[in-house]
Image (cartoon, rainbow, N blue to C red; front, side, top):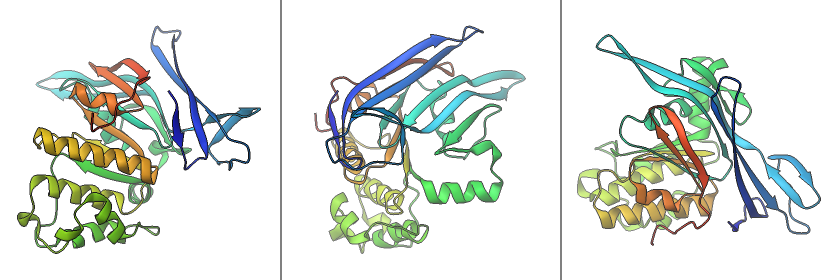
Length: 287
């Protein structure tokens, strides 16, 4: 896989996933990206080691042994059963699996919406389980953007005002006008949500999530309520956001067709990682 990563000034040269068994028989997946930095290329603070012109990029998200249990009708359900996964800065990861596989639970734990019963999660060097509620709120506000299947727009605010709400939460927001142009909704900026189509509402929701310039963008079935044509348009926008702004994107989906546009695919079943691989032939959303 060779892909330009302009924000880091490097070219992705090699992707490798190692899988081994721990002492208790648990599968451990380790992903390694090797990137080559052109002569005179700018250093990044995300380096974890280098040899000559070969650079290894550190994971921005790392989970170790995540477990989550629910009690349903007196029975214990293992929503997550020992999940170990790492996500690199700027990477586009698709978490795939059938309904009930644990993918949304994993996304909610990464987003600080829910907590794990066992295991640890580290975001950019900080462990979530050690954070106070106030610090966790600041973490969500500063580092995360959310895109859900439901748009959750404020009905009495215009399209522009809904996006500006996200900008108020950041000390380094993106330019609202430029973002609306990128999303193709600039001409609708003074309309209320009930005057917008489903696709336009989802574009607005994406704008609200992106405008605060988050390090990580979490997408939970973002095209689940849209038709095929509009879904392709929204996926293309998310792809553009990843390439233009360099956000790390984690997308949950049960749609196998979507996984081909991601840098890497993590497949869950029964709360466990069954596959963790890089797309050697990544496709554009338009394909």
